[in-house]
Amino acid sequence: MTLAISRRSVLLGLAAATIAGGAEARSWEPNRPVQIVVPAGTGGGADQMARVIQGIVSKHSLMRQPMVVVNKAGGAGAEGFLEAKGARGNPHMLIITLSNLFTTPLATGVPFNWKDLTPVTMMALDEFVLWVKADSPWKTAQDLIEAAKAQRLKIGGTGSKQEDQIITAAITRATGAPFTYVPFRGGGEVAVQLVGGHIDATVNNPIEAVTHWRSGALRPLCVFDEKRLTATEKMTETQAWSDIPTCKEQGLDVDYLMLRGIFMPTGVKPEQVAFYEGLMAKVRETPEWKELMQQGAFNTTSLTGDAFRGWLTREEERHRTLMQEAGFLANPS
Image 1 (cartoon, one colour):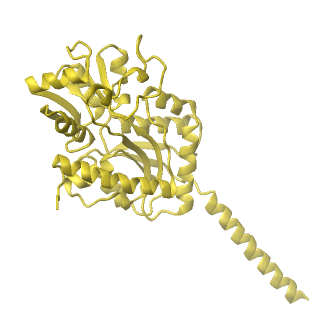
Image 2 (image 1 turned 180 degrees about the horizontal axis):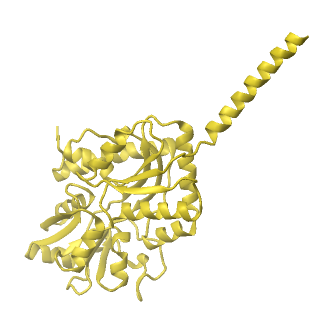
């Protein structure tokens, strides 16, 4: 009898330990500060989003450990991607991505692919708007196109052979209007250069230019989406995001949306990925996040798991086609 009780006690103890271990795995959370790598310069859309997430997590105490934003913009973001690729198994590193997740390796041949990371969640999709100075003579996209045909104009953008230059090349293919593309380190700098009159136009994200639009310094000509933006709150005295026509409405048949997503290094555990999925879901429910989405006219699509991986696979192929057409592939064969 004593032996039987002893055995049962051992078995019950093992079962309790197993249950406790499972609970511990399911409730994993960081035990040191979490780094968010931004593979782009300061002031741009990815940088702004990372810092909003950082602020939300801190303000609402969504995580016991702090978040630290680190910009790794070198090599069109390759610096950040390679650091995350080399951090296999590190659950205390996140990377917030834009579409240079696809364009940087395709354009440079750097040994990196999105499959070298662990997808966590799509936070949103970002729009692109064709911007000019408010005091410029161009009131429509066609005005700008005709001026570019008469005199080669300068369009500024973030990086070389990245999203902004892909859109610029697509404009030239669609219209025959030549532009001189001028690269800068980040979208914030691009907007400042346009306000200063050092370039003639940009294809900046809404969040990167909204402050200058509201101040009266910039004018939006059209949005590179198949449909108008949905936000109806007035951003200036007379205009809301929904008042900006699509480029197709103005005879410019070009559209493009950009990823804003969260990834981790490979080799992390499912419960660690689940923690950050849950964390970002909580972030998206806060008023601060909803304000960012409204101010920046984001498409609020969110994906996780297999749906996100499927989207990434399709987008990689789409970017390969776009970059091949623009002549931007490092290895065209």
